[in-house]
Image (cartoon, rainbow, N blue to C red; front, side, top):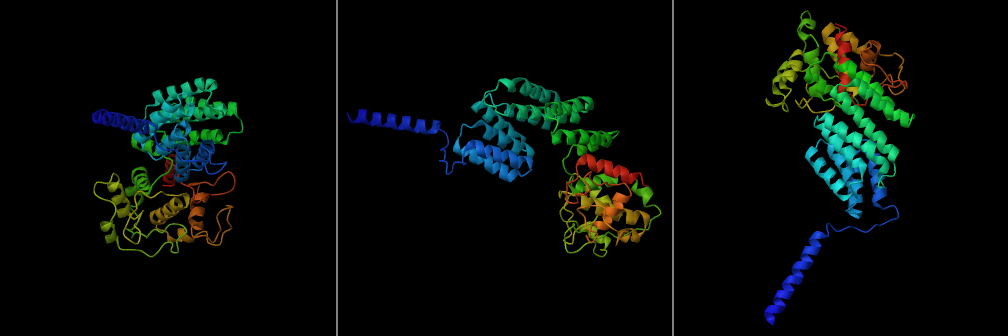
Amino acid sequence: MKTTLLKSFVLVFAAAFFTLQCAGPKERKAESVLDTPEYHYTQGLKFLNSNDLTNAEREFNLAKGLKDNFAPAYEGLAIVALENGKLKKAEKLIDESLDRDSDWIPAVVAQGRLLMAREKYEDAIDEFEDAIDDVQGAKSVKDKKGVKKDAYYWMGTSYKRWGKYIKAQTSFQRILDIDNTDTRAGLAIKELAEYQAAVAGQSPELRKIATQKEITRSDVAVLFVTELPLDKIFRKSPAKQAVKFSAPGSKTMGKKDIPSSVHGSVNDVPSTHWAKSYIDKALQKGIMSVYPDASFRPDQTVNRAELAMLIQEFMVKAYDDRSIASKHFGDATPFADVLNTSPVFNAIMVVSTRGIMTGMDDGTFKPLAVVSGAQSLNIIRNLKAKF
């Protein structure tokens, strides 16, 4: 009898344990009428659109915590992973989203984006076409027009990276056919023309830079060294010592020269760094420099003001004319967002008056905006034309 009771207890315990295991994560209770999976997902999308990945991820996790079976939360987290370059994590999250709801078409669009990131452009376009074809009958999707526009946008981006520019243009135009007020499509068409100009005749390595949303100091070193005829430009120019670089907004700007021996003690560019040879040459020529702590910060993103400063210093050395660095002191500013008292004003005027970098259509310069890969290639090409 005791043996029978013991067996029964073990079976009941095992069944209860199995049930708990199958039940999935414990869902939290809503704390407000706005504390719903749908609301957090919508907020997450807004953060994604403003490139705030941290808050987007938090909102999607809040949505998932309320309802573990909520497919959109996993799709949103997959997009965050894609934006962070975590492709395996994105793949797993996309699968989890579609496992929970095979009708959730935005996850199909995310699948296309994953394939695009892996440079499987033909397969990516198949996914986008499936999303466009299937979204009309998808009961889970409320904003069918929005999903279609998103699919066409990423289809166009895939065609662009694949080098099929006419098809890319057509895809972006389809968005405007759906909604002629869509600003993202208009910008995409403008950027497509910019991208085509940037990659024309370029090596595969520089074509990859053209696809980047933003560039780093390493990328700038590569562009200066590979795209500009440095030996020819500096042949008649006396050797110069590098000037310490200070980012716009810091208390110091353009401190006095430092010895070239500092170039040999850069503390954050190991011999294995992919751009070391380019960085070394940029430092040797004095066209880029180290920070006061002897760091180069190779992975630091470069904004428009910083690139203008780097180009100004390059021109000072190339022309052996220090007056370039003060040429526009006292001039009136043509840009609504750049004061003529700003430490970056002269550099911005140097590049804008020479057509190396241009302002925006709205009369601003956007000094703190990042520089895309395509923009950087066109800017360096404009600089090269001056020599």
